Image (tube, rainbow, N blue to C red; front, side, top):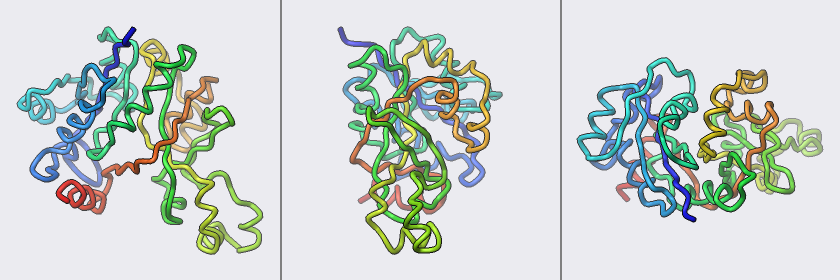
Length: 258
């Protein structure tokens, strides 16, 4: 039986580096509507909802005849915003699609949802992709993930993991090792930041207290691992582009116009 799968796109207006980020135009269309379009192209998604705390974002989405809901301005995380909306939905699976990924591939969203459809024991899944440059391996805003043999997350970090100890000892630093041995890049996986949850798990997860590793790395998904839940990680070939900086924005504009 086909499961009811709803995509929720959290969209905050505030952004330190790109104020009003959801409404920034990319090739003539606000970024948030680009994300909605991509999510709606995913075959397993039954419904797409933008969750925002800003009336301007709500109005732009509503004026485009897309679905938006206003949420509390007091949420500290995107998961809290997601859970507020999910609590009022009749759905088995909730997909968290980032509102700053205007180039997200529908196939990537499909890949995140697939494990939950296939295996009732899986409560949370996400995706990862290859890292192809030393710069990305070293950047703290590019989150890395390591997995076990069954494809479940062991850890997420802003640091390069797994750490190539022998190469670093020989070359003097992680930077030198990565530049001298580009083959090391194959050991790293970038966490894409797209999640799928069983609705009941999401509601329980949002109520869990923050954990030390989560706070240390500023990575909310570590809360699930620290509380003993497993996260299935699905490798995907498509490279995601999160729009966090003016440089990211120009790249997204070039690619969509291009």
